[in-house]
Length: 235
Image (cartoon, rainbow, N blue to C red):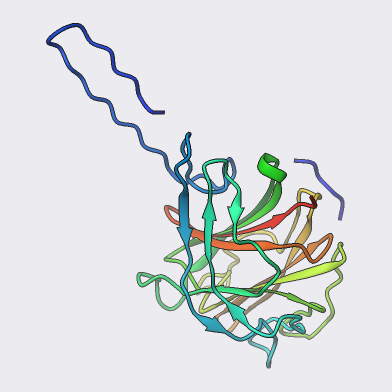
């Protein structure tokens, strides 16, 4: 595996003639971290608040790994107008599935990663879904293993983020993969690579190799449904 680099509308009218223009911004995970606008207004992407266990493996239905944090507590991920994800830290985080998630499971459609240089910079990895948004559990772990065989997974970088999606699938009912790759390269500043380590009995998991145990944020976006993880660069 190798490294890769990576409104308001103004209206003017003559006397007695008035016009009004509206502008809106939408989600774009690859160009900006959250919907933002110029000025000092903040845009907020909120994750569900709950407490969960660390992302560890039990049996063959989950990704293995030894969590290095004692608990997973969901947070609210906020982006200021400059696009910086606030509230990032090294603690485990989780989100709940949305109420419209398809049954039996939302399906993974894409995994992509990019570098963002604004306000100190961060590397981003995005998991896109169809059929709704599954819950997500993200934490640093000591190691990564394939959930079926238990085989160890070697990753570039000195730390591993385990990203686990309960009640999800990366294949169709006929057993065909919905996303054609099981590993991707990262931008290389913090995220080096990501490897799928589980797609079994309603659990999908990816291990993300990062350069160090850096602060990260977890958030969700809609249209399409996405789970977004931002890993901050070094100061």
